[in-house]
Image (cartoon, rainbow, N blue to C red; front, side, top):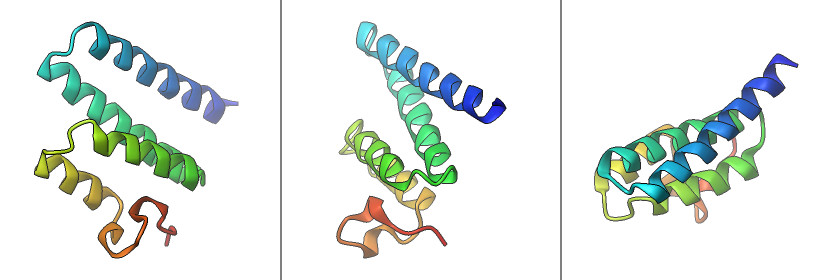
Length: 93
């Protein structure tokens, strides 16, 4: 039950940050949304939900498409991504 509670709390946090960014699209809120989105993707991946994690990472990559540092951060968190035709569908391990 604790893992489920943590998963739901993280989902709720992501939804709240999305609402915050929509209401006030300040740079600090975009950074918060990017961070929470990436952490949610990593959580999903860690739980074995690779397809959901891939979707989350794809969405996260579009939050700041022209930011090379952001794109690099995403790639660093999912090693080998550039080598795959669909980088977010990498196998774990």
